[in-house]
Length: 458
Ligand SMILES: NC(=O)c1ccc[n+]([C@@H]2O[C@H](COP(=O)([O-])OP(=O)(O)OC[C@H]3O[C@@H](n4cnc5c(N)ncnc54)[C@H](OP(=O)(O)O)[C@@H]3O)[C@@H](O)[C@H]2O)c1
View 1 (tube, rainbow, N blue to C red):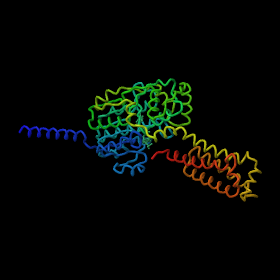
View 2: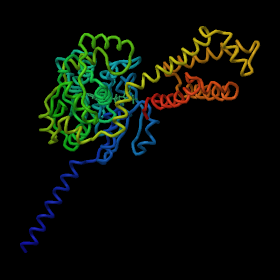
View 3: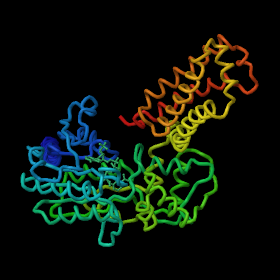
View 4: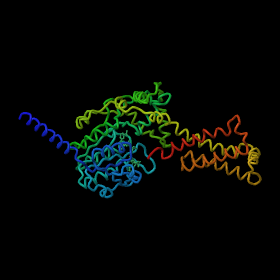
């Protein structure tokens, strides 16, 4: 009898655990904006694995349909969708809205106030009208009352508007989120992999990264147990480090032997950032530099208190996700990628200019004659080939239709080699490698295609 009742009690306990779990893990319909981004792409499979139904809201839904057929993909454009009426039909049957859209630098048609303020506010207002109570806004650490940058101010405007609505809003303020595919991880690991690690000034800026896995776990915990009332939660790891320490940690993670830091004076960094404001390359801007200089540290205790999730140090989270050969290759190739395109582009332009204006025309005509081209066809051939070389070089520099450009480059190189082999075979044994250099150039051109096409995205 005693045994029977304890078995019954145990069974009841299991049932009660199960029912609590079932209530807490109520399956929901979640609208995830920015589902194609670093954070969105990590959240998406996690939400699906939890049994939720996800509506992925992206600019190009057709690109995602085959990857995640179980997701309903819909189109949105934060640059334009500033009216709640546009959002209302997208919110049919939605239980939770997660906003993970954002940019780190403005580009043509991509303004902070549109993407971080106007569109999210329209989305939040529509959600309130549709009776959706749960809204998770991914803001950014520093989007507070001391915010100064346009990035932070634009985020803060949306956060404040959300808090003014009659919904249960949770606003997350992540510090730098690290993890494979993240913009910061990509850049920092590439910097850490250089022969000398560049740091801003003395590299003493405070930084408190959170790993994307911890980020996901917190979001899941919040969805299981949505907190009452508005919540503003900093999302940071449990270890505040300096920028220099982070570089050392990243280098150790990559398994590259230690090296010295290369302090770049802050005024020089500011100048570089200013130049890059104009060039538009990568994430370095006057704003992003200002944000780094201001520091990016916070307090992990509140989010742990609410979610029960014990966050990790950056060191532990890196160790828990060991770097692979692919990580090392990516880090080491990162800064070589633009150099490769630049050098190939300049090579074609230079060849065109030399052929047309510098190399003695008579010598060029002699070479053409050896291949059977003479008379009126010689100048036509010489100058049109030079013009084509320059055009291919310029197209390479600006990465215009790179697949087609590479196709023509390969065709030309192989054709030149075939013609020279047939008509001027002595060039194969030229001491300057006039023909043999084409072999590594063909391979380098193919590597450039891999680097540049779609920039590795999707
Ligand atoms: N990652 C971090 O370290 C970090 C730290 C603090 C805060 N945050 C915030 O977290 C959010 C997500 O960051 P993330 O790292 O995932 O950024 P991300 O990888 O750059 O992704 C940004 C997302 O925004 C989407 N997007 C950009 N312009 C859009 C537009 N006009 N209309 C609709 N969608 C648009 C992108 O879609 P496409 O694929 O179409 O470009 C992408 O899905 C951002 O708000 C960011 O500020 C991130």
